[in-house]
Amino acid sequence: MTRFRNAIAAALLVLLVAAGCNSGDTETGGDSGASNEGWTPEYKDGKLQPLPDGFPSRPITLLNADAPEHDDGLYARAIQTALQDISPVAIEVRDQNYPTFGTWAGIQYMQDQAGGKEGYIVEVAAMVGASLDLLTEPIEDEFGMTIDDFKPVIVTEQTPFVLVSRSNAPWKSYQEMVDAAKAAPNTLRYAAASGSLLDIATNRLMKAGSWNAKVIPMEGSTDAATAVAAGEADFTMLTPAVARSHEQAGKVTALLVVSKEATAPGDWSNAVTTTGIGLPDEPWVSYRGFIAAPEVSQAHKDWLFELFKKAGEQPAPKERIANLPGAQSVVLNGEEISKIVADAYAFAEPVIRDLGLAYDQK
Image (cartoon, rainbow, N blue to C red; front, side, top):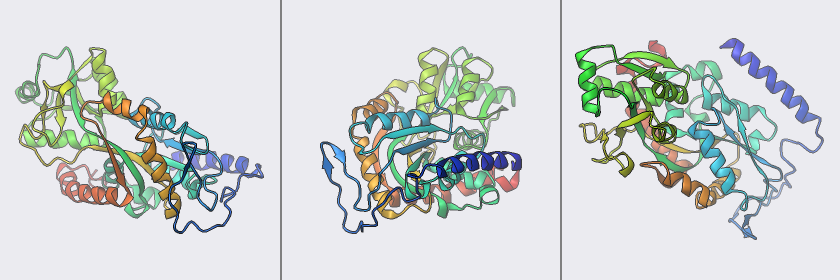
């Protein structure tokens, strides 16, 4: 981990030196010093106008701390497309595929880049999963960060988790798979995005149902999905976008959806839900949106909230939602997100410790 952080620090130093060579690239981005007090959103020719202090005066970067094909990368690109005719400045996407501590490494990255503390870089985040990293990974030890450094700007979509199995498995339902696992303990192969919220949700299911499986550790959910699709693992837990592509290729089958509804969404109507199997209180869903560096002012976060709220009303995000079973378009502000995160954290901590997945139990 020390070697990984040193490599990041060296890369950031190069970027910062290069940024310093550009005389027009200052930390304030050319802000005028005018007061933002009393600001209300204003649109001209469909574009959201900058704040009185001049923010933004240069491109805004949407940071994806995962692979481009991951849900976060696909989401970032849908928002980028939606903002083409709305934003007064260019919107760029940067894929920064961190092997560990993705969201929190992304926060550090934003803090270290010119303009990051002003809001010129915002990071895609699955809010609950990112916050629970504090329980499963040594975030405070590695980064010196706590939940107080997690600053949500907006959530624009909510998606469930879905447990999928290889399509050529001998079982055709979730219960049949559980029965097979109980008949041959620790032999079903579970492709685990180790330590993730997806992994927590799966372990919770196994413990509640008194069954187990042989764990095949994976770096992330896209790798886990590929392993199941290739027949190298029997099942895994995924987000809808990752599951959908393999399902449409006929390689995986959805068996269970984490949902407070009694029945699964239409495209997965043959699957059961956690509520349907007697677990109605599971909070394991993705609330996806953007976070900012801790130092970004409230005024700049308010402007970004307005921009991304407007983006969510455009065709590209709506099309994305329409193609994800169980997905919903929502608008949550920073305060609302923080409450969801706090509630999920309180629910999850004893669950994670009961499962032995807390970072100080490993």
